[in-house]
Amino acid sequence: MKAIVLAGGLGMRLRPLTDDRPKALIPVKGRPIAEYQIEWLMKEGGIDGVTFACGYKWEKLKEHFGSNFHGIPIDYSVEELPLGTGGAIRKALSANSREDLVVVTNGDIVTDLPLKRMIEAHKQAGELSASMLVVPYRSRFGVVKIDKLKVVRGFDEKPAFPDVWINGGVYLLNSRRILRSLPEKGDIERETFPKLVSHGELLAYPHYGEWVYLDSQKDLEELEESIPARN
Image (tube, rainbow, N blue to C red):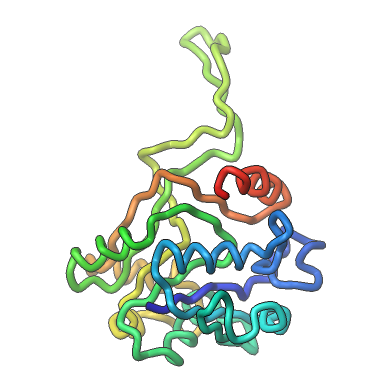
């Protein structure tokens, strides 16, 4: 099974770290985040090939990974102009249309998701176009607890809300079915998923485990603190 890593973003919130490299090459404990992702894809999903859907500073990716990493082929689907997530996936899939089921992951997350279980759940669900990882919403702010008299009774630092789910940025796509719903240019979240929902074609896979979204310097600090526990 192949994987597509979405790595075309400009990483504006992480400047100056992304002045001279794509976000996927931001170092976490001395290693690019993309290395952690590829190792996870291999270990948890049995992935045997990775395509970077890339654009901004993509040459840096190729310089680092070349055509092979840890024994699996690496290639590059390069956007001359930004295509959005949907357009980027469409371009990458069109070059690898022989694959029936493809893993797609945003290039800025680290997770311990048991990918093989997600793949099995997708297959057992039947002929669906896609599955989406969903994770509990976690507030970026601390929550103040007050009673009926408005007296503060406690604090909850960045609580998770287990009944509120957000898109976790990992997808399983049946390439032949999904291509007809992908835009030439635009985001899969806005252009494609609403169409699939209207036809009952999108399966959710809930995951309560580790999931970190790298979008700011603070996210990077928190991710680096968690790495020793993961290794």
